[in-house]
Length: 125
Image (tube, rainbow, N blue to C red; front, side, top):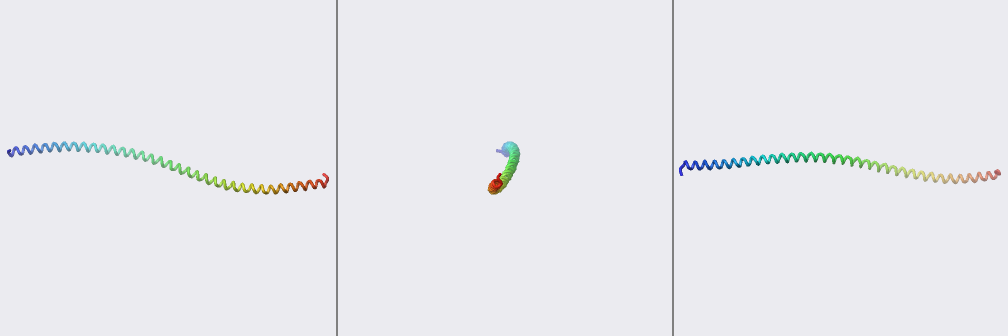
């Protein structure tokens, strides 16, 4: 083999290597385009998920506030009921006291009736 043939063979081999490198370059470029497209799709999905999570958080926050308000109303109602119960206990005691005094008044009225009857007999009426 002559030196010229050796150089031609080398050039042919270099051209083949360049074609393979070119092909690898194109495949790499296509892979990068696909990866970029995938990343864009993932970012859009993440953004949509973030929006959805934000809306869910807002709804849950509203529910927590509503539950808190309801709990405050129930506590207030419990307190008012307890106050009412205490007040009714006081009223019940007052009524029992009035009943006791009425019993004494009835006894006095009976005594007065007897006195009036006795006076009327004495007067002949």
